[in-house]
Image (tube, rainbow, N blue to C red; front, side, top):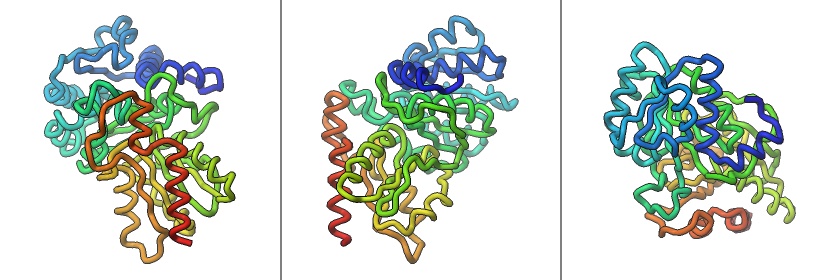
Amino acid sequence: MELTKSKARLWSKLGSRAVFGMALFDMAERGMDFYAMSGDLVRSSGLGRFQEIFPERCINMGIAEQNMVGVAGGMAKDGTPIFATSFAPFITMRAAEQVRMNMGYMQLNVKTVGLGSGLIMAQLGNSHFGIEDVAVMRAIPNITVVSPADCGSIVKTVEEITHHKGPVYLRLTGGPGNPVVYSEEYDFVIGKAITLREGADVAIVAVGTMVHTALAAAEMLGESGLSVQVVDMHTIKPLDTNCLDGLLSHRLLVTVEEHTVCGGLGGAVAEYLAPKAKRPPHLLIGIADEFPHTGSYDYMLKACGLTAEQIATRIRTAIDETA
């Protein structure tokens, strides 16, 4: 699935889950060996067409995520990649023990996929929000954690993690109308961040939906004279520490994520920077340590301070305080 401007626009309209399913379907048509599972969310996982054309390779396990991860582990014993999909809080927290043993401890080739992570589930409420999933998965040894910035990068990520030997948590954020970050071919490598904009004053390290928002905030800050670098840290575990080392001369380092500020990207970066004698102030921007009030997706992003304008304002304030 070659990434072009026209495809990027189309995929953006379809949204994260539909494009994830398209990527699996394309790989199946090309003869790649893998299976897909769903916790009674085949169509919500974008797997409707995949199930229709390749019914023997798509298994609906019902609303039983713990069992699904266990079965996925058994099927992956021969090394075959198994994609196990459900809404983010269910695949990470409901099945946490099975993920820990089958993926973390046994290091089986299971790729769990957190659908609708962050706040995109909106009016379904906090039971469906994926705001703690990175913290849970990042704490389990041996699991790679990846969160693509847009639909084009989902396509690149899905193929890459299929070839990657070992357990992966794929975090899908955003929905239909996901803003485009990547509109042409680029190299995607697990564990290697991508610098999208250069700058010397402020470095914004973002992940998932917040990459596009960070770019918009950087534009606003640039208009006021600040030189802002933006990095897509698509792999939260393992972090690209070489990239982080290159940001230590900035006046301010900012992490931005559609996840609680406890244990996500910001926490991972803070853990890495803590032992360093010389490092810039670190501003962590994410969802506060609380359950947000339910509403539309746009309403919730604003309520959590995750719009470009709000991010730019917080960064200006932080810069003024460090002057």
